[in-house]
Each structure stands twice: as C-alpha cells, then as structure tokens.
Length: 103
Image 1 (spheres, rainbow, N blue to C red):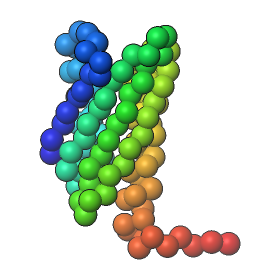
Image 2 (cartoon, rainbow, N blue to C red):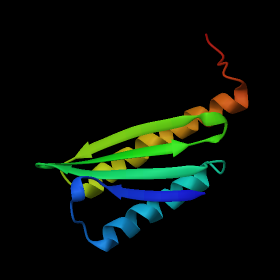
Image 3 (tube, helix red, strand yellow):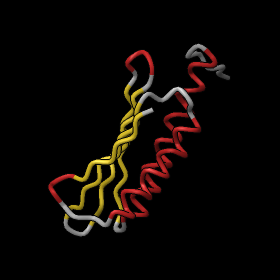
C-alpha cells in the first residue's frame, strides 16, 4: 500500500508532523486491509487547519473526507474519524451486498 502526505501551498511544517500523519494513516490502513493507497493533504488557511484524506480502494472506488479545526491535531482526528466511518460503511456494504434490512 502506498502512503503519501502532501503539504499544500509550500507551507512549512516540521518533519515530525509528516511522520505523525503517516503513522495515523498506517493504522487506518490496517483497519481496511484492501486499501491501495492513502493520501493526506495538509493545508493551513489563516487560523484553521484543513486535512483531506483520500483512500483509493479496489475496483476504482475513491473515498474522500475532510477535517477542519483550529489545531492540526484536531483536524487530523476529525478527518480520521470521518474516514473510519466511511470505510466501515463501505466494508458493511461489501459484506451485505449493499442491502440493509429496514423496519
């Protein structure tokens, strides 16, 4: 599986930030083993941080989530929480053929 962390607009972040994000992405990849690649795009917009996570799955499925917060850690946690939820929903749809029992 391929991991990529991109920092947009030539902003400078310490190297430990990139390493921290890569460690979190590796943990996320273990949750859903068939992930082909995970990308994180980190951007600072005035007083907020924006982190976009993109997961490329088999059969051309692409999942995209975004987290925004006042701190980088909070934005990362929000985006990871959203991606975990989206991956769990996708995994459930694969297991149950896209059908859910209602009523």
